[in-house]
Amino acid sequence: MLRALSIQPGVLATTLAAAGILAITMGARQSMGLFVGPINTSTELGITTISLALAIAQFVWGAAQPVAGGLADRFGPRPVLIGGLVIAALGSALTPFMTSGLGLAFAIGLLTAIGSGASSFSVLMGAAAQRLPLEARGAASGVINAGGSFGQFVFAPIVQRLIQTFGWMSAMWALALMTLAALPLIGRLTNSAAAVVRHAEADHGIGHAIGSALQDRSYLLLHAGFFTCGFHIAFLVTHLPGEVDLCGLPPSVASWSLGIIGLANIFGSLYAGSCVAKYRSKHVLAAMYGSRALLIAAYLMAPRTELTFYLFAAGLGFTWLATVPPTAALVGKLFGVRYLATLFGLTLLTHQIGGFFGAYLGGLAISAFGDFGWMWYADMALAALAALINLPIREAPIIRPAAA
Image (cartoon, rainbow, N blue to C red; front, side, top):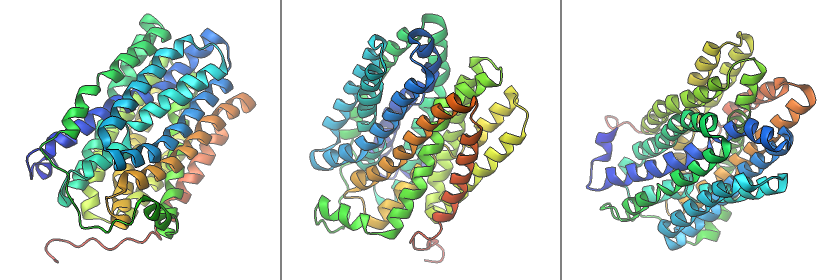
């Protein structure tokens, strides 16, 4: 795959810089579930209140995507990425000083979410796509996405160890410093030798692009499937530590499970990037969502052991964020890359609306029923539905080089 990114000077540097930024922002963001128990013990705010703050963060992270994408399309990605990283670090640094639900909602739900959203998929994918030739975009999206998964793999066990050794407040301050460490990579991305590639696409303005997209049935179906993806990921990243605790297993099982998810998704993202060039993206997405429904069913029938959680994490991790490359590819195929950051950002907003419900309803379920049983059933049903609704999406068949 890296060979496909070495077509022109600077292409590989652009891709790796974007992957590095995503590794840091996603690694920090996907580790937030590890703080739920320690924050509750320290503040006694209750799981539901803390879950609401994280649910708000899920939604705000998604809402920031199209706004940040639109600003990047208009003013360039550099100022957007710098501002995003600084705001995300500020939110992490302020969180330990918050002793109320409203304070947590402000620090985690707004600041960290806005900052990490402005320095995440929509801006990074858009910046890279506009600087890469058409033949390298599929492979690049897989590598960039794998960067986010690598960040989760690295951050989860490190954050857990920091919490256990120094306490959750110090761990949160360490996250703030690690977020700022991504700032030097922005120059490598925006000043790369890979100049902006001008693709032959009509430009009728961002308003026309959004309006046309929202009237497109395939684009709306893509949103519906991505809603399920957000529900699934937010539920697990927020409440997997609680599920592990219910099973009487140590917290390290949760952190290693999250790490395994990230590790498995490195391979899943790279594979998804290669599949974009070989198969229709809608079929790739349908297979991913269908596999999630089957894996959840298998988990519900399995004994709750450490091995079960690790195998479950590896299976789910392979498709965890691997839905991003085919989804971004479909948006690019339908509407081009001129406003990819904005239009893909809108799909991420829908993704995070699902994330809001996944995180918040999980908190309500554990408070009302004492377990996550109904959430697992809802997650499985939504995954099966997402597999079906991706199939009618309008997408031309892949033309093989030999056939061409």
